[in-house]
Length: 266
Image (cartoon, rainbow, N blue to C red; front, side):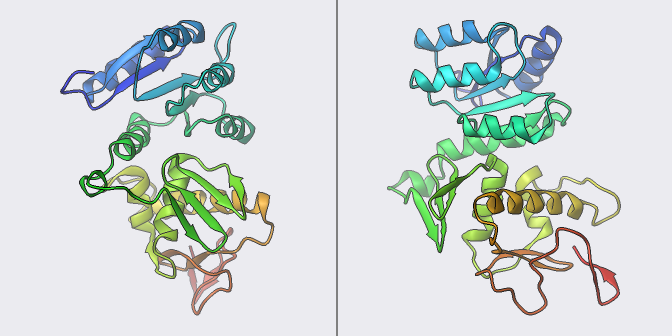
């Protein structure tokens, strides 16, 4: 990796136009990119000692699809951070990718800024902060039934793994490391997209995006515990990681909008 590069990236995708376009865009953002049109040459590259910081992996490829490439990597002890890039949007594919050891799953229809944000989270996490570099840090953060493995961005509830994407993991970490403290919609949105990013309709349109993330996180926790109820909503403001008993002015059942004091709650 050159001194000026943000990180070194392996891009594995059989779509020539997409691969060329994305590699140029990533290069413009300061990444050093090595590209492969199939899974086999990428595996050969790693077997011969090739090294990168992040792997961007397509799902549908000839002969060996992306999930098989990931399985081969893990079986060979190649534990690099993997982000799937795919047109397959069904949740079953995301779950399979995460279960196979991928850190994130991004649809190709999403904007480049979304992908860059996800990559930046991985790069920043691997480098650590200056304070972390000065000494050892705890690899597991525990709060009640929740365990967050900070070294590999994995979440467990009652000892059972929750298949969160890297972004979802960071949202949970943001709330859980500040228990019983209200976290605003804007703060969660900034964590996902970066400060100052605007989206949605109207000045508060970004709240729908945050609600979608929270709803999905809740659903994933409820797969392993139907009674999970620790993410509490403060209507009109944001969320907090509670103890599952609720609180004044808050509701834990906000998967659908409700009316509070004549205004739509979030």
